[in-house]
Image 1 (cartoon, rainbow, N blue to C red):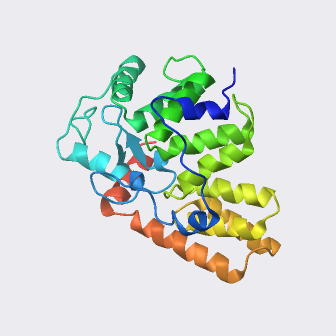
Image 2 (image 1 turned 60 degrees about the horizontal axis):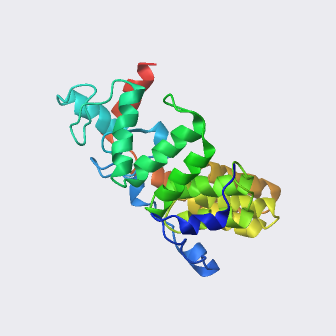
Image 3 (image 1 turned 30 degrees about the vertical axis):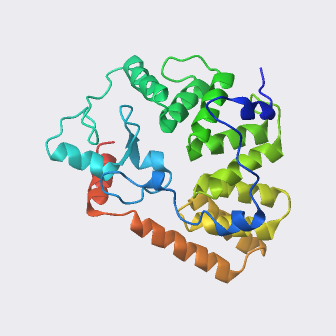
Length: 264
Protein backbone atom coordinates (compact mmCIF):
# COMPACT_ATOMS: atom_id res chain seq x y z
CA UNK A 1 0.00 0.00 0.00
CA UNK A 2 1.30 3.46 -0.88
CA UNK A 3 0.12 6.97 -0.08
CA UNK A 4 0.06 9.62 -2.77
CA UNK A 5 1.85 12.84 -1.69
CA UNK A 6 -1.20 14.94 -2.60
CA UNK A 7 -3.23 13.02 -0.03
CA UNK A 8 -1.25 14.72 2.75
CA UNK A 9 -3.12 17.95 2.08
CA UNK A 10 -6.44 16.21 2.75
CA UNK A 11 -5.69 15.06 6.29
CA UNK A 12 -8.19 16.82 8.57
CA UNK A 13 -5.72 17.21 11.43
CA UNK A 14 -2.94 18.49 9.23
CA UNK A 15 -4.22 21.14 6.87
CA UNK A 16 -2.23 22.01 3.74
CA UNK A 17 1.54 21.74 3.60
CA UNK A 18 3.15 25.21 3.91
CA UNK A 19 4.31 27.01 0.79
CA UNK A 20 7.55 25.97 -0.88
CA UNK A 21 10.75 27.25 0.70
CA UNK A 22 12.68 29.91 -1.21
CA UNK A 23 16.43 29.56 -1.70
CA UNK A 24 17.02 32.73 0.34
CA UNK A 25 14.95 31.41 3.24
CA UNK A 26 16.61 28.01 3.04
CA UNK A 27 20.14 29.34 3.32
CA UNK A 28 19.48 32.18 5.77
CA UNK A 29 17.25 30.35 8.26
CA UNK A 30 17.70 27.43 10.64
CA UNK A 31 21.25 28.16 11.80
CA UNK A 32 20.35 27.67 15.47
CA UNK A 33 19.19 24.43 17.07
CA UNK A 34 15.44 24.11 17.47
CA UNK A 35 14.18 24.36 21.05
CA UNK A 36 13.36 20.64 21.02
CA UNK A 37 17.12 20.01 21.35
CA UNK A 38 17.16 21.65 24.80
CA UNK A 39 16.80 19.67 28.03
CA UNK A 40 13.69 21.05 29.83
CA UNK A 41 15.36 20.72 33.25
CA UNK A 42 18.87 22.18 32.87
CA UNK A 43 17.97 24.24 29.76
CA UNK A 44 21.22 23.28 28.00
CA UNK A 45 21.33 21.94 24.44
CA UNK A 46 21.65 18.16 24.19
CA UNK A 47 24.54 16.79 22.14
CA UNK A 48 23.75 14.99 18.90
CA UNK A 49 22.51 12.37 18.34
CA UNK A 50 19.98 13.30 21.04
CA UNK A 51 18.94 9.69 21.63
CA UNK A 52 22.48 8.80 22.73
CA UNK A 53 22.62 11.55 25.36
CA UNK A 54 19.11 11.68 26.76
CA UNK A 55 16.09 9.63 27.79
CA UNK A 56 12.61 10.17 26.31
CA UNK A 57 9.92 9.89 28.98
CA UNK A 58 6.75 8.21 27.69
CA UNK A 59 4.54 9.96 30.25
CA UNK A 60 5.23 13.54 29.13
CA UNK A 61 7.30 12.95 25.96
CA UNK A 62 10.15 15.10 27.25
CA UNK A 63 13.77 14.28 26.43
CA UNK A 64 15.81 14.65 29.62
CA UNK A 65 19.59 14.78 29.28
CA UNK A 66 21.64 12.05 30.97
CA UNK A 67 22.97 14.55 33.49
CA UNK A 68 19.52 15.54 34.74
CA UNK A 69 18.35 11.94 34.63
CA UNK A 70 21.18 10.85 36.94
CA UNK A 71 20.92 13.93 39.17
CA UNK A 72 17.20 13.36 39.74
CA UNK A 73 17.88 9.96 41.26
CA UNK A 74 20.78 11.28 43.30
CA UNK A 75 18.39 13.86 44.78
CA UNK A 76 15.80 11.36 45.92
CA UNK A 77 13.49 10.83 42.97
CA UNK A 78 12.98 7.09 42.98
CA UNK A 79 14.11 5.02 40.02
CA UNK A 80 11.40 4.56 37.45
CA UNK A 81 9.73 7.92 38.17
CA UNK A 82 9.88 10.72 35.61
CA UNK A 83 12.14 13.53 36.79
CA UNK A 84 10.08 16.09 34.87
CA UNK A 85 6.44 15.31 35.65
CA UNK A 86 6.92 12.88 38.58
CA UNK A 87 4.80 10.18 36.91
CA UNK A 88 5.71 6.55 37.67
CA UNK A 89 7.37 5.05 34.63
CA UNK A 90 5.85 2.16 32.62
CA UNK A 91 6.90 -1.35 33.59
CA UNK A 92 6.11 -3.04 30.26
CA UNK A 93 5.86 -2.33 26.54
CA UNK A 94 2.08 -2.42 26.83
CA UNK A 95 2.12 0.17 29.61
CA UNK A 96 4.52 2.37 27.64
CA UNK A 97 2.29 2.28 24.57
CA UNK A 98 -0.75 3.12 26.69
CA UNK A 99 0.99 6.28 27.94
CA UNK A 100 2.09 7.20 24.43
CA UNK A 101 -1.38 6.66 22.94
CA UNK A 102 -2.83 8.91 25.64
CA UNK A 103 -0.46 11.66 24.53
CA UNK A 104 -1.27 10.98 20.86
CA UNK A 105 -4.96 11.50 21.63
CA UNK A 106 -4.00 14.82 23.23
CA UNK A 107 -2.31 15.86 19.96
CA UNK A 108 1.23 15.67 21.32
CA UNK A 109 3.45 15.75 18.20
CA UNK A 110 6.35 13.88 19.80
CA UNK A 111 4.02 11.10 20.93
CA UNK A 112 2.71 10.71 17.38
CA UNK A 113 6.29 10.62 16.10
CA UNK A 114 7.23 8.00 18.69
CA UNK A 115 4.26 5.80 17.84
CA UNK A 116 4.96 6.18 14.12
CA UNK A 117 8.52 4.96 14.65
CA UNK A 118 7.21 2.02 16.66
CA UNK A 119 4.89 1.02 13.81
CA UNK A 120 7.63 1.53 11.24
CA UNK A 121 10.09 -0.72 13.09
CA UNK A 122 7.53 -3.10 14.59
CA UNK A 123 8.65 -2.29 18.13
CA UNK A 124 6.85 -2.67 21.49
CA UNK A 125 4.83 -5.63 20.23
CA UNK A 126 3.32 -3.73 17.29
CA UNK A 127 3.07 -5.13 13.79
CA UNK A 128 5.28 -3.50 11.15
CA UNK A 129 2.88 -1.04 9.45
CA UNK A 130 4.36 1.62 7.14
CA UNK A 131 1.00 3.18 6.09
CA UNK A 132 0.08 3.71 9.76
CA UNK A 133 3.56 5.09 10.45
CA UNK A 134 3.20 7.56 7.58
CA UNK A 135 -0.21 8.64 8.83
CA UNK A 136 1.18 9.30 12.31
CA UNK A 137 4.35 10.98 11.03
CA UNK A 138 2.21 13.25 8.87
CA UNK A 139 0.09 14.24 11.83
CA UNK A 140 3.18 14.80 13.99
CA UNK A 141 4.90 16.87 11.29
CA UNK A 142 1.89 19.10 10.83
CA UNK A 143 1.71 19.56 14.60
CA UNK A 144 5.32 20.77 14.53
CA UNK A 145 7.59 17.77 15.11
CA UNK A 146 10.73 18.15 13.02
CA UNK A 147 11.90 14.55 13.37
CA UNK A 148 8.63 13.44 11.80
CA UNK A 149 9.04 15.93 8.96
CA UNK A 150 12.57 14.60 8.34
CA UNK A 151 11.47 10.97 8.37
CA UNK A 152 8.70 11.69 5.89
CA UNK A 153 11.31 13.34 3.70
CA UNK A 154 13.51 10.27 3.81
CA UNK A 155 10.57 7.96 3.01
CA UNK A 156 9.54 9.96 -0.05
CA UNK A 157 13.12 10.33 -1.29
CA UNK A 158 13.68 6.57 -0.98
CA UNK A 159 10.18 5.47 -2.04
CA UNK A 160 9.88 3.47 1.17
CA UNK A 161 6.19 2.51 1.48
CA UNK A 162 5.12 5.42 -0.71
CA UNK A 163 5.45 6.31 -4.36
CA UNK A 164 8.92 7.81 -4.71
CA UNK A 165 8.82 11.57 -5.03
CA UNK A 166 12.24 13.09 -4.40
CA UNK A 167 11.04 16.68 -4.81
CA UNK A 168 8.34 16.14 -2.20
CA UNK A 169 10.82 14.47 0.15
CA UNK A 170 13.31 17.31 -0.20
CA UNK A 171 10.55 19.79 0.54
CA UNK A 172 9.85 18.05 3.83
CA UNK A 173 13.55 18.24 4.73
CA UNK A 174 13.67 21.91 3.77
CA UNK A 175 10.73 22.71 6.03
CA UNK A 176 12.53 21.06 8.95
CA UNK A 177 15.95 22.50 8.10
CA UNK A 178 14.79 26.13 8.19
CA UNK A 179 13.60 25.54 11.76
CA UNK A 180 16.96 24.28 13.00
CA UNK A 181 16.91 20.51 12.42
CA UNK A 182 20.49 19.26 11.77
CA UNK A 183 19.61 15.82 10.29
CA UNK A 184 17.40 17.50 7.68
CA UNK A 185 20.09 20.05 6.86
CA UNK A 186 22.64 17.24 6.53
CA UNK A 187 20.28 15.35 4.21
CA UNK A 188 19.95 18.41 1.98
CA UNK A 189 23.72 18.56 1.77
CA UNK A 190 23.84 14.89 0.79
CA UNK A 191 21.22 15.52 -1.90
CA UNK A 192 23.25 18.37 -3.40
CA UNK A 193 26.47 16.35 -3.17
CA UNK A 194 24.90 13.41 -4.99
CA UNK A 195 23.68 15.78 -7.71
CA UNK A 196 27.15 17.23 -8.18
CA UNK A 197 26.37 20.57 -6.52
CA UNK A 198 29.40 20.53 -4.24
CA UNK A 199 29.30 24.22 -3.35
CA UNK A 200 25.72 23.99 -2.09
CA UNK A 201 26.51 20.75 -0.26
CA UNK A 202 29.31 22.50 1.62
CA UNK A 203 27.00 25.40 2.53
CA UNK A 204 24.40 23.05 3.99
CA UNK A 205 26.97 20.99 5.87
CA UNK A 206 28.62 24.14 7.26
CA UNK A 207 25.30 25.03 8.88
CA UNK A 208 24.61 21.59 10.35
CA UNK A 209 28.23 21.07 11.48
CA UNK A 210 27.99 24.29 13.48
CA UNK A 211 24.89 22.85 15.18
CA UNK A 212 26.81 19.78 16.30
CA UNK A 213 26.31 17.32 13.42
CA UNK A 214 29.46 15.22 13.23
CA UNK A 215 28.43 13.63 9.93
CA UNK A 216 28.34 17.07 8.32
CA UNK A 217 31.75 17.95 9.74
CA UNK A 218 33.15 14.71 8.32
CA UNK A 219 31.52 15.52 5.00
CA UNK A 220 33.25 18.89 4.84
CA UNK A 221 36.55 17.25 5.81
CA UNK A 222 36.20 14.83 2.91
CA UNK A 223 35.23 17.68 0.56
CA UNK A 224 38.36 19.56 1.67
CA UNK A 225 40.52 16.50 0.93
CA UNK A 226 38.89 16.20 -2.49
CA UNK A 227 39.37 19.91 -3.23
CA UNK A 228 35.70 20.92 -3.09
CA UNK A 229 35.99 22.88 0.18
CA UNK A 230 38.66 25.30 1.33
CA UNK A 231 40.90 24.93 4.36
CA UNK A 232 39.21 28.02 5.81
CA UNK A 233 35.77 26.45 5.42
CA UNK A 234 36.83 23.25 7.17
CA UNK A 235 38.52 25.22 9.97
CA UNK A 236 35.39 27.35 10.41
CA UNK A 237 33.15 24.28 10.52
CA UNK A 238 35.45 22.53 12.99
CA UNK A 239 35.53 25.56 15.28
CA UNK A 240 31.75 25.91 15.16
CA UNK A 241 31.29 22.21 15.86
CA UNK A 242 33.65 22.34 18.84
CA UNK A 243 31.94 25.46 20.20
CA UNK A 244 28.47 23.91 20.19
CA UNK A 245 29.85 20.74 21.77
CA UNK A 246 31.24 22.85 24.62
CA UNK A 247 27.78 24.37 25.09
CA UNK A 248 26.31 20.91 25.66
CA UNK A 249 28.73 20.07 28.48
CA UNK A 250 28.14 20.43 32.21
CA UNK A 251 29.58 18.85 35.37
CA UNK A 252 26.32 16.87 35.73
CA UNK A 253 26.60 15.47 32.25
CA UNK A 254 30.28 14.62 32.65
CA UNK A 255 29.41 12.73 35.84
CA UNK A 256 26.60 10.91 34.03
CA UNK A 257 28.92 9.99 31.17
CA UNK A 258 31.42 8.44 33.58
CA UNK A 259 28.64 6.73 35.53
CA UNK A 260 26.84 5.18 32.57
CA UNK A 261 30.04 4.20 30.76
CA UNK A 262 31.32 2.63 33.93
CA UNK A 263 28.12 0.63 34.41
CA UNK A 264 28.32 -1.03 30.97
